[in-house]
Length: 217
Image (tube, rainbow, N blue to C red; front, side, top):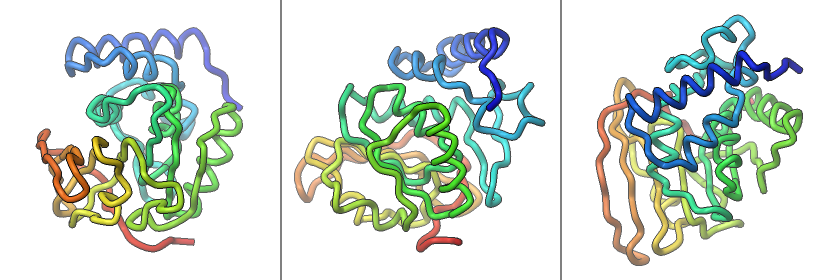
């Protein structure tokens, strides 16, 4: 496996300074996790020199690894406390998963693309990072067996609100999800105030890969 050198660590520090000073990330738990996780290990080696720039890159199955600023912003909106149960919809290459684990969350993660499921599972094990449960399945269905969750993060854009996921959120819990058409979504945070009442907050326009149902072998 590729190494995490002093050069990589130095670039991560520059990225974290950028996230703090230019993007406005203030959650030290998020910044510490972003500083800890070697993003270059989750992307193809041809992109390694650019791994700590605020850029998205192509990964397997025609998907992308999100901009570091997007990962940081979604993670901050979750307001994660150590030991909370977090459901991640869209494991992707495993980078966001690794950040959540570095934030000391108990992570349950679902991926519908078999290539990415296999890649992320292997990569996380190589790095000695272990989600509580890693599933190949339909993100719209969530993981009802393990519900309720303290927090839910959706890393792909949904055209409609997945109500099944809201059911799996505990009262007082938060879900961060991009909603909207394929070309552009709006990032929302839903807070579950009671079994039937939710507060909805809006955090601007983003562009995510689409959230799709079922699984893709």
